[in-house]
Length: 280
Ligand code: SAM
Image (cartoon, rainbow, N blue to C red; front, side, top):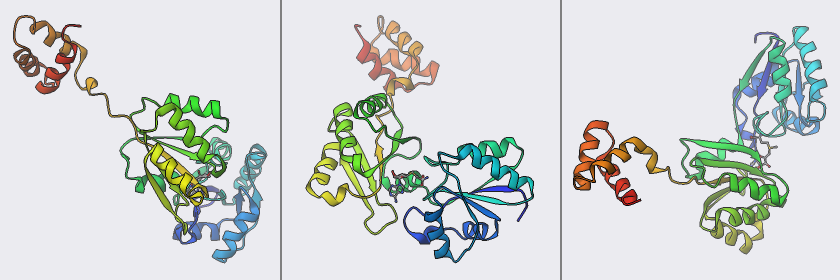
């Protein structure tokens, strides 16, 4: 192992077998582990049979912890940073440490593994080619509603974290802003015994949760299907205007065919769109 490096180590989000071989090797070989909650990490290390000095590195002491970590790196030591579960820095502490360490000229090395966003997405059966992750939903209803309203026209799949005691309120606020028909997926208790994917319209998912209070328990990742891409973007305004202009002299189908030949836009799309805009 090279010296003076900060390793950002992912740990399991439920199933302890999800620790990677590399994560174990790194945790075994570093000089010290910076942990969000040292008691929590101690349990994982005990399970792995690893004994290491731990230092607390959480939201409230990150600046100070970053300084201590830099001093250790300067002294030639290797440091790992872990959070309570999953990938550090992803809606978890560690950003300030990584930033300060990189600024101080040391290498920040990722040790990938479980991450709730990706674990949820890969089995949600929603489009995954493009997505946005917005961390935790706001805790107040007004702010949550305003958040949902801001993603009303979002074409990408939206992924959000929500705590168990607010999940029903979050579904209610989503319904208020995006409507009961909005398609959502709630990934619950990922990699754990009661792992569940609730899929359907927001109203259907709410009904399932109301009918069975067990479905309201545990940890959740909320995913919202994006709106269909705006077909109009596939034809330029200029091509549409030209089609409408020519259509004043020729049948619309002919006009669309002419513009399609000269611009490369699809004839049918030009025709459909021109049809919608004719007479405006
Ligand atoms: N850094 C972690 C990650 O991305 O894997 C997430 C840490 S964040 C403080 C904790 C939130 O992640 C939970 O409130 C929940 O929304 C989500 N989460 C973590 N583990 C989960 C699991 N097993 N099942 C569902 N959601 C989970």
